[in-house]
Image (cartoon, rainbow, N blue to C red; front, side, top):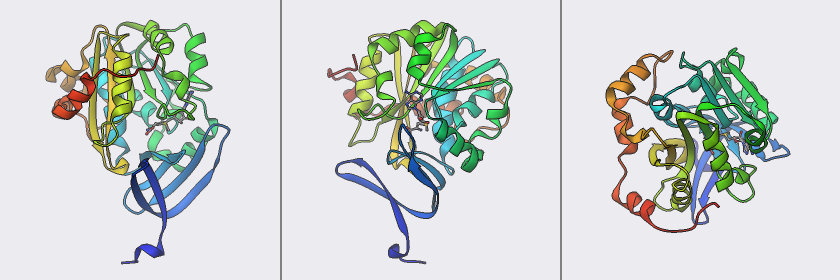
Length: 296
Ligand code: SAM
């Protein structure tokens, strides 16, 4: 077994005092786009990985845990899934999961960074698995903020698969009350807005709680859920919002019927995993109940 000094390392910094290092077996690409720094790596344990601005976005070994969690609870609960909108989602795996549902007529994906999308097609084709060529896919390279302002269509599900809303990220302008209001206006009755919503990790759940608090001013049901994503070395959180659908309370029969109708087999999500996703530990429920600052 080679010793640690034989490897080069990619070190992800979760917080000023928390690091996780992955041994790099190969670097396919490392550079900067006009929007962010990008690395496409292969790591020893997790296989290929996309890293943006130093943060792991997804890994070959476990991206299905993240993408199935982001997509399927919201889709299973939505009243109408004919039109779906993805904000971000550069790798194409969110698009892949949405298009596994035969009732989707069109899925629009809007990502600001055409270079990330092209790098994903070139080096990470397993993520999209043909979804970019599906005639139901409409892929727009542009700012999701501009798209939301100008687009007049309505959607059964809006999925935010954006980078985290850190101040220097191109996603930051999409996290404020005006945008939440605009997205709500884009939903059909019974529609669901679901977001990847940072970490529920013990040391760093404040950003997630801030997102949930902010969204509660706009939607009747705002449900946090999370799962452990090994490549992130973290509990990853999501938020499902709707005025009509309480996504946490979708019953098992409805989930079974929805999952049974998908093309291919799930890796992670089913009715049992759904219960686990939404069963939050006491410390997180307490954090979510706290007053605090909001994205306004
Ligand atoms: N799994 C991810 C994570 O851990 O944060 C998010 C996945 S995805 C790679 C994030 C995508 O959001 C990137 O491809 C990035 O280009 C896109 N993005 C960031 N800001 C955006 C904006 N304003 N409009 C559209 N796409 C944006």
